[in-house]
View 1 (cartoon, rainbow, N blue to C red):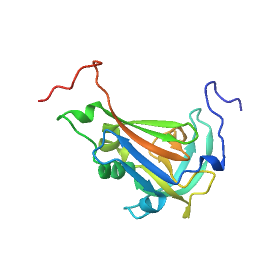
View 2 (cartoon, helix red, strand yellow):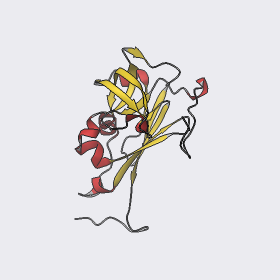
View 3 (cartoon, rainbow, N blue to C red):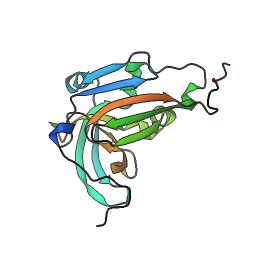
View 4 (tube, rainbow, N blue to C red):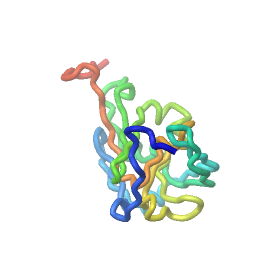
Length: 173
């Protein structure tokens, strides 16, 4: 199959393996969490995940992923809410060490069924992640095309605040 234009080749390299997740940006408590520390948090499991890429091609089937909901990680970091409607202006980027990234709105993560299955992964099919995925990864398992927001080698999650009028401040209510 011909790879779509502007898509990146998958690169599997031990140099990309991540051992720590950094949570930063618009948070009161920036975090650095190891796979072991994530494993000590409340874990959730997503089962029977069909990996479908952006083109619709089936990339395989995963019996289970275990890890921590991204919302739990963000709650621990304590996202900054400057005004009542701050959730409408917040978005989250997840970055991997191989240059891939995924984007989520705050509302999507905390107020939809999609967010219930955005998982910071530490186990696949009952085993710790291997070097081909890093020790820490991410999936949005409720997406129709789950491969689009599946990141190997997850290294950071950053919370951003978008101000609609550049240079303006959000109005306090």
